[in-house]
Image (tube, rainbow, N blue to C red; front, side, top):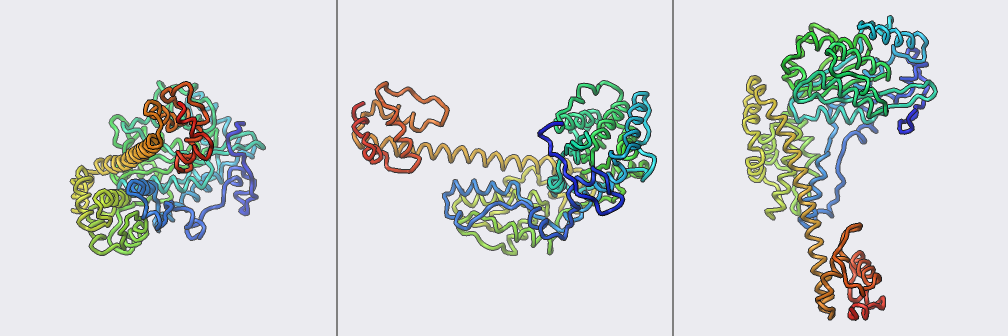
Length: 500
């Protein structure tokens, strides 16, 4: 067994259907949306202090970057949290590897697969694994909430007592080109990276797609995959050359034949494509499907914005006004990711422009400049015309991703600028002090270069007579923000400076 995997511990199940099943007894208890501890731990809020509003402009701009990972738990998230727990439990109830008949069924499944056929891995229990579908406009946090929920469960466990691995969950993003074969190969690669196995060497990507589905299903069954999450499923459903028969085979093989539950995430466009698949397969959506629409003006919007608005690093931070709230909604149409990005960009502009406050006019100005590519999509959302909205789904998705990347890049660039500014200020301070004390200009430049050189990098070569202790003393003074000349004098090294 691989030492990097979490060794499984077991809590005896209180329900008879789960008793003695190591796949279930090793899992944490089901999370309830009403649990106070969950309410406190599920969201991701940045560290914040009112004192930080008095930091320099550059430092406050860096602080704004903390909102990149912001997550506020909303009422709609509770259902998803509970659904995932229920799906994991239901998917494992009839898959007990501690039972001899289950192991025999796996062997039988494997032998049937070698002959090009497939049979269910168990004759009793439900005919299909529970599954769930979640749809919504890009930027509403579908992937984030599902990933956050899954993070409360171990990714994989090592059952040393029984001699097998358990992959509790796996999340795969559909490739942009919608290739089903690439999706299947990604599943195998993710298994290998999780467990340290070498299944990729034995899986032939050049075989017909139906055989590849069987190969991947066998691997999923072998390692007791608890739930497979497929994100951006619209890419798969809209791809050319992938017929309904191949998709049916994929879904049926996983949910019906090897009993691996599926959770599919996608845009409203994916929901349209899946309707036929649901009718034909009746395999996905047994736990229902949910549609996450945009926030609407009202209680939910007010709550989201009120909590978010606390994280201002502006010197004139103010409570949100009705005018600002209206402007924020008009420019984002209630899309969560856009609200957070616009809030960040508005703060950055308020700091740069020295107004140090967010107004409705500032929000409109920033949105006009930064959301220009999104304007057709936002106009479609404002119209409420579903046909128009469907036309711009891909634009919304790509723009949300681009905005997030842009904000991250801005923060990274700002970090570099701040670091460069600090080095420049230190260089001026140190050089002027040494020259003012009477040190020779011919040695000060090289000496300052070495003192300020990052650890592990080579600085300009200093004169051979310059003692190491002089450099070390100056570095210590820099670290302690002390006067360099006084530090040398206190250390008895001032003569060494003039002796060079």
